[in-house]
Image 1 (cartoon, rainbow, N blue to C red):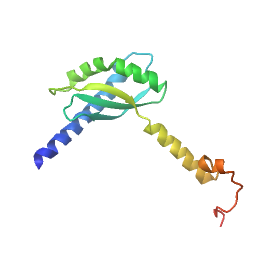
Image 2: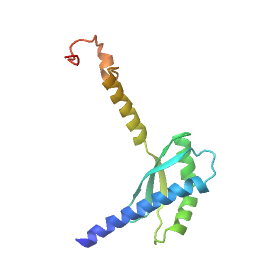
Image 3: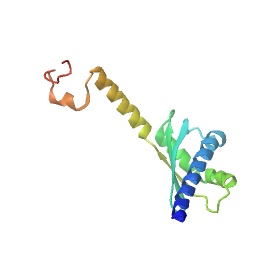
Image 4: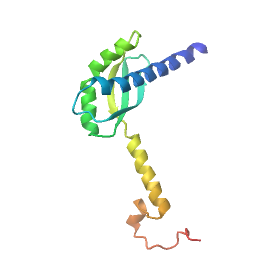
Length: 137
């Protein structure tokens, strides 16, 4: 039972360390003008540590061009991580834009609008005339 628990815990620790190292390396080492302000949100490792999918969000700049720039720099970043991490296999990095932050902000905005009574969304297409929702009782 213990042996089965060690492998996932180690994978989580390695993924967290890669996330931490990339968060330090990207702004310090990469001088690509296509990069916006990048935040590493998550790292997922394959069980054999061969590949790491790195999810990121962007505050400034285009997500598509930032993803392209990060994927172009993935070999360099992998080499820099290899120098920091002392493990046998350093994964190949694949960067993907994480849209959960934007979706969360959109959902929060929709909830705020609904609470203020602004409506929006699906009820607009039905031609509502303000009758019978019971919110004023």
